[in-house]
Image: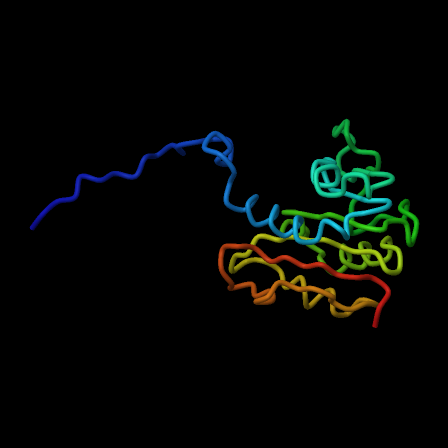
Length: 176
């Protein structure tokens, strides 16, 4: 019988989510998704955490950027709110909302989606990316109950048990 001397290290090879080795895999798919839909990133844009994607993919089409964070400690945040309860954000405010890697961590997904739909202007877009894993919430099922329709879901749709690429969704508000 042969013995295998391969040992799995007890410490990660990198403690910065892969940034020391280039672009993490999930960022590749997020960037590709936002590149395909860059024309929809326009007007008044809301982004979660910082404004990197809005500036990079929206460019001159963006007239105003707001950054939302649940924590007032984020100095970049222009709006401090919890998406599950955000009455301080007016209805029909944003032409585009970019929300990446956030929805999987929200306990009451339906309330967050209701807020996103409420604060998006009619004809505006919600550009969402959610990591896929067996524990991922069924985001598309939640959005289907909103007052709108999908215009360009990911080609293979969203499946909580899907692959590692993540679920991309571009949703146009105000259409039935």
